[in-house]
Image (tube, rainbow over all chains, first blue to last red; front, side, top):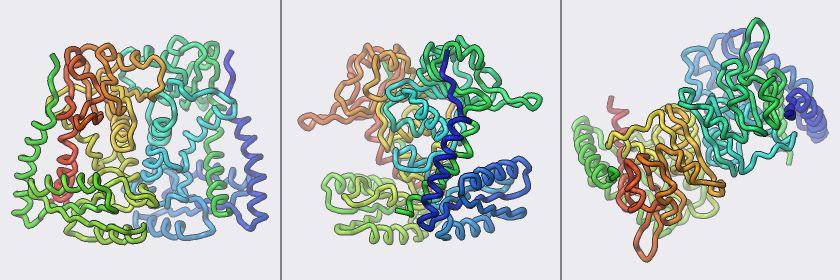
Length: 280
Length: 280
């Protein structure tokens, strides 16, 4: 039976830790502050932003929403310039995707690296690749946090990463290139895929296909991280056949309740870290 | 018998192509221009810079050396600002390593992305990781160029990359994450390493150990790229036991004469590309 890596439990714990930290910072006269930038009127984007604001407020981080309904790149750049220069703002994030007509990389790149708490600007990603200090994207930080809290051994292991998104798979790989691990990343058309997945001591899956990873594709006693979110009739399913794989793995994340609940909290924690940096 | 991927022959061919291109650009009134920045008085750095200048002049690219013997970060930043703003300069490169006391990433980052023909700034590396258009570092470009000129098949293959330097192994991996390939990167302490190297359809080696890769570590008919430069009594040896491995591989780079001779030429070609971009 595998250890269930419970993202909700870890998130609650971190929320308590963050409450204490923001308390401390406020005693020094610093209110950790996150500026959220929302462009356009996409309903889902708005919902995500609201979740982030709620989590900020829960732990005592001030959230400032900058919602520009109609704007071009010029307006957005001006807004970002102001946020970069404002000493009371510690973290800046742009809710992606941006509406059509925006060069996302170019926009995100304009957030100064010290405030890029989302860890998604090309410059931050380059620093992660080089092994330098940088804020990690929430998905990457969430995975590493789960392993760390449950004291799962991952150094000197063989990681296999299936599915390379810009926000998780690619930056996670970039991070791991600087750790003492062997990493294999697969493209989905890989022939004889299970031969590769069965080599994994740590398997990270993000392929957006319900129950794609079955028990016969997993090595006994390996660690399985499921980053999938497949919605079917308002229920969410992972990329891993959890019920069967958990009988083989030594540790596994459920969906829902694994990586997901940590994402927003990781962003808020990066903001608190950014505020802490100026407090010393 | 393997095809020998002859870097000198490919470099000569590219030099001819570049001569024709600079000729064309000059007819349009554009002289491709590379600004080289050398800080301090390291003998080897000086030698590399001289090689680059020589290659520039050979193909008709104007090379401007900015040698600042004694300088701090402030002076260097000012110099870079001027070079970024100068419309006659198409490429800017800083010879690394910088003397002690310089934050290399921070300095290289200040080269504007359109002029970062060395492809080494965090922002450029981040763009490569994201799969966006960017100048590739010379080592990466050289490897891809050799494979392309000799029409070596590499798509949908399993690449294994041994040795992750900031200038080759890491950016090469970042690039490949966006190609249709499976990539394994290994840390040197990997147990049972040859089991992994024998899985490689394309094996890239950069571990700075003479003849580290022996014939029994290589899959029959694979492609072997040797990025090693191990000096012994003024002779240079690769990381691959070339004489024996070439009997097994389908294609292989010699050392010397493989990747090496292409490096400087790739930098110069990026400069010509940068000049071409403003010509259209």
